[in-house]
Length: 252
Image (cartoon, rainbow, N blue to C red; front, side, top):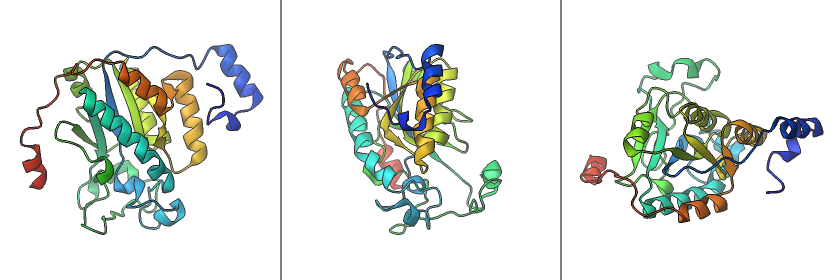
């Protein structure tokens, strides 16, 4: 792989240090992966593709057009994993209507108490966007802090499924994606981050955090390479939920 998205942000000294220290080696793939879809909801994407400076007027956490550019990549990976019977696990936020449990999120943002709704149907911004809506056999983990592991059953789900690795897409690269990647790494899961399946509201933060994760914690690879790997896996390796009754539950 030649040019990487972060190369333009690195000094020659940075490149020399990484090479000399041995960072950025390509780690082995796992044998039983799960796809983690991190926080691709309306709060982070807005309701439609539009410039971020417009989208954040309503959705303060929006990543604008970058979110929607990544959407087809995420859709493709979800479709492949479902077709193979590979677990697809979503994360999204949850908050009390009175916002009391916003906690430390309220300390660093003066718009933190806003709770925008989807204009067409009044859904909360934490609703996962329709284009990649969870299916009946997928799993959804709700969280209140950046990592998908913190205070959630995610690790126990991965253990129940017998996963040894995770493939991560979503947002924001510098926030919830990175936090989830570090926790997965800390639990000795092999981690792959899909470069064109992640996005952030800051392009510099996006690139540099991909660089740092690739150096130390994960393989950062384009979706094309990830799709090739998924194609090599056997069909039906996992005991997934049956999905029975989930459509009725969603309707309620």
